[in-house]
Image (cartoon, rainbow, N blue to C red):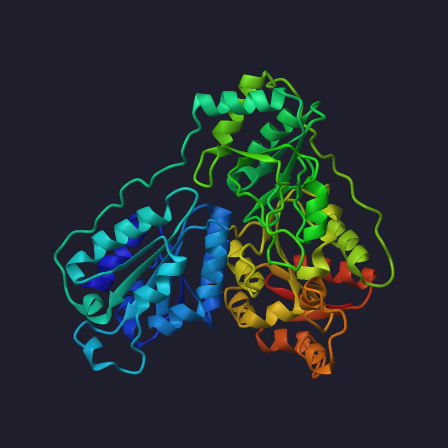
Length: 516
């Protein structure tokens, strides 16, 4: 058994059985080892951000890590944007990065780089295996790190000679990962007293507390308490929404709207969430969203057991028999005619099937989708978390592989789709049931909005030209067909609904170019 085989066996023995790959020469022995183990599902991406974004989507939907296989420092660098997004989504991921053989590094070959330095800013743990004998132990430690609640990024660097050298060392079992931190009784009592005080209080909820059962508990707390409200963080890895579930709105992305929403609260209680801040700095506007006189309290930190804390708080408040405000199935009127921000939300609400996974990288086109779909069929909603665009297509890949029995609808802005358009090829190759809707407005509308936000009201022709995607116009049907994905166009509400239904009935991926 060589080092590469030791690594694959360690991954499989510790329930890591999916590997998203974009290998090179330094990883060939690992590729051969993967080939020898049928239980490991290997998924090829034609660009590294497809690979890392898919691993993120897989972890979000199945709550365990996949492995990625990347080629040296440049390969890792190409995948950093979606590792950053995964980090912000608190996803588990094990990045396996090949390196030159240990004896070859000193010759400074063209692809030589400081891989550890590249990996550290986006990884919770970075380690280079020094020999084949160490690989299983190092891999087990990487798995433990990745599984640490709520999910962490672990990067393991393998010099080529550690992969091809034989080892007699046994395969190692990963140690149990640290679980979530429980709240103390003192914390629960303090928070309960704040809620009983009658002062305006906001529960800010994130992480895994946006799943169905924790949200119902939070709903019990706010039911009948006019001084208590709850909001989700602006960007969330996964939210369980729709009929039969407790509805929760998000703190808005636009700073002015966010400031208006929270301006009257005297207390904010964080439950697996962070103190909210603006995405960017804007002239004359605060970076911190909560009012200066709002006192922030931590019920459960990012690595805390928010679910258990909510159970304890409900018991402390005597709210166990209180009924939360569960959403009933109620669709908005089905709008007809032209496609725009308001009509799109109506169509999508009608199209979401039960137990669907919705991927949201619609950017400006999608700000009206969230309220419109609140009481549609029950579904999971996965967002862009870290702000690095180009995640939607790969995120859908990982979600579809993690939950092959669930339909996936990907709401995708046209500009950001071009960042990882290669992922369509992977969707076709793996025959994944993903329906992608491209909102074709032929521009980076988000950047036009941001330009106004920083006070630039009248940009000149050069500035405008950098924000337009109409010269030449992208032909999304041809792009999809060229990647092996069936596609169609929609130019009004009726045709869009028909196209979505066609995509959901398809046995493989389907793309819709929605003309706005």
